[in-house]
Length: 237
Image (cartoon, rainbow, N blue to C red; front, side, top):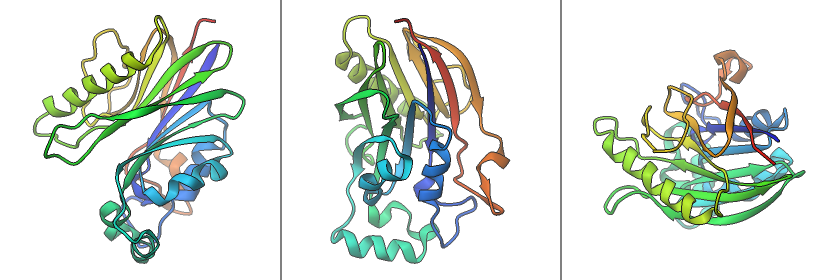
């Protein structure tokens, strides 16, 4: 079975460079337009979680890393006045895994991967079933470029969570923004050379592609400061 996995840090719906307007719905619609099997998104505003499934036409599973400041409607309105300025400071931060509706999917929950005292970072996971099953995890590690040991430690905590969640011999996919180019996870293939990647255990990687700039440009606006990454996997049935 082939599985098309895409990961994208959507930068809270901001353009690059940031503008007053937000583009999150356009990003989600673009990222889902060619029907990937799994779409992992990072840096989402919390208010967007119940809307993702409708925008993408996919089954959406969200997890909140940092809650929005109350009251939610007011903070969402204030952020909308200048999306590029306020970002997640008021509306919180979340991640999501979207799954094509042809596949069955089960939420496996989430876990904190950051250590105490730092901004909370999480990994969350779903089990995807289509001929066989596999566990898909999604993370957004801490942005600590001066100390790559920190995001690597978070990746290892994410690995441990996924391996506890997986059944014996079940393939595992860990996608997201690792904020380090070499996560160093034993037993996992990581074909890319950027901080956004798709790591795999128990499946074969057939193709990896990073979107060129023009593919995420609309009406002269570059969507997000990250490029989506595509990975096609071959999973034994």
